[in-house]
Length: 532
Image 1 (cartoon, helix red, strand yellow):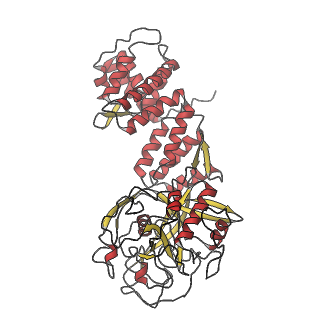
Image 2 (cartoon, one colour):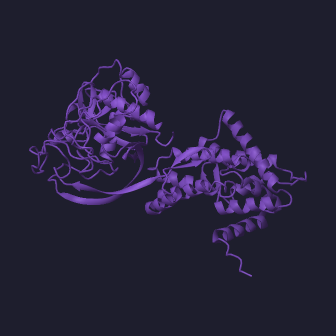
Image 3 (spheres, one colour):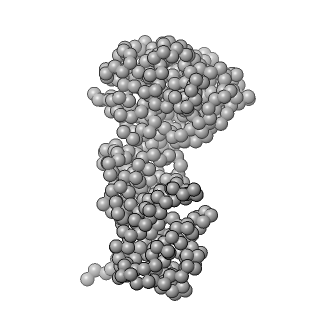
């Protein structure tokens, strides 16, 4: 006979803690602990509700649980206070207690169903009350309750939550992964969801290589998993090197980084990559001390950005041709407008109106919300956490960007003046994994021009003085409003034709929405990219 497998040390320790608790307080207290192990989070109110509701076993025998058992349990070493009046049990303790509840002749699996229904009703009452529990706690209660009575519904709700996560918030990723671990038994049929949560936890703890391997095995070459009707994107990662320079343009640091992305297929071998941009807060505009800064870049002000996806490169001529052949939405598109030809060169000679039409056609084909970035999104993505004039550092050189190298910034040397665009991906990316954010071609933004930042929104939205209510948050609104809107539009990033100061992260430029030039292109963003 094969020896029995060794028990997980965490489970062994949990059993010892539970036995000590039972010896100290007695069997009635232990019965309460069985039931209070069911929710993922405990408040005194919920614990007293459980105490009052479950004073009888499934044979209608009174359990004689004293009211003081609630306080004894919450203050014991079975529970940890995570914040004021909010308690959690260790996962191993919960596992042992729930298993004992199911195996106990007085309760069994029937009691789990009763606890599920009770918890769902408790959540409903709390949501209707004047002092409801926090949304996070209510959500946890709902998930665990549904997991035992309606597992598919629970899996769907969890998958939807995962679909909206900010992958830059590592603490939240770890927290959610820990929560998902508690569903190993009730959601055993949704193995992909459990594996996804485990890999997400690795990513949150900094093991990006391990997470990448787990996601690759999970996806098996596919970009999406269907879990309970939710198309959950399988994260992919790419590795790149960033460089930092001093004011002389000398490279003083190189760093290897990873970024998350997904690929969209336009057919006939034409694809594009969308890079995940984590949310955060940054100082938009230039400080007073920045060399050759302008009044239009002031006042520098804090802006908080929600996560989004942005094109790894500016739109290329190959991508433009593929989209230009899609059905017209509002206006015709020239399928080969560029002055400097090349499939992998940026498309240029496209107006703001053309770029809006491109995004509309792309959205219609893919079912995702593609649009031009807000000016705040663009600058946040360009800076990638830096506060210097360029994401490369204090200056740039023509080894790092395509601009008029006959001119210099700070103490950098003169360089090449190429006099034309170059293929996308020709220069090192920034810390988010975005290429050519400085130089090559100007990039259209959705916003109308404002002469400075007085009164600018602080939440990353498109700034429209006529309607500051996220008027252009989706491509449909942007398309409709562009019909009779001739206001000048924002351009960012500089180009091959301009000097280096024009490529600063904070520099703002503008043209009429129907203007075209062989140094004007665009880059698009995707909002709620993983919800189709």
